[in-house]
Length: 228
Ligand code: TZP
Ligand code: MG
Image 1 (cartoon, helix red, strand yellow):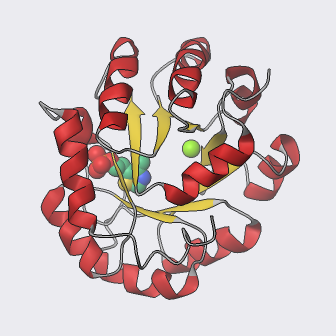
Image 2 (cartoon, helix red, strand yellow):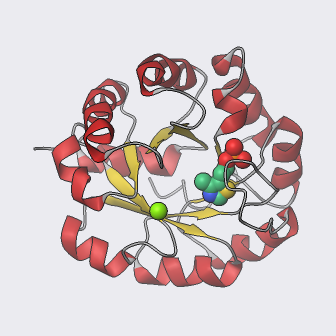
Image 3 (spheres, protein in one colour):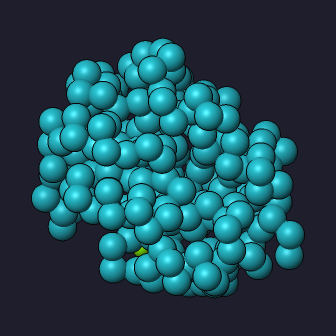
């Protein structure tokens, strides 16, 4: 199956994205994802991930097949958390991998150069290694303690300073983010964030997405977006 979004458009969207929204089945049922995705896209979310740790593969595939074309109509990529084997069949633009998942080089071999590959990292050292291995973007966190990933020790926002210097691919700060913490993360150099529970539990997801983006300030200093 061809990707729902042309790969070059997907990569361009990644470079422009400042807010990465994750549709997570532990906060919102799959039936709500299309409408949530539309509301979050209206609020400025620039890239989406489907994260379903508790769902069977066939349901993940079915949901991704609905979401990928809906987002593609807006020029926005859908990334699958885990499941590199479902990327092609679902029409998703890419895959997000953790430190203990299939490695970036192996995933690249399997999925090719045009598929977006993202990597979760929990230290500046891991972020640098992920970039060197060819990740298209880095997730960096959890900055703050979060019930979405309760077993991980928060790394704190000050570490952002370090990866700002080292990392040239887009990096999304993640973990326990709400508007005030995004302001704090931005003060340490964050230009992109990834948010799960704050957006999925928001009474008005569009307004909440806009609020998060407003806390990031302007994009004039985004060295990685200038290339697009
Ligand atoms: N990776 C690092 S922290 C995290 C993931 C998936 C969870 C972030 O969720 P929330 O609800 O925005 O804190
Ligand atoms: Mg994983």
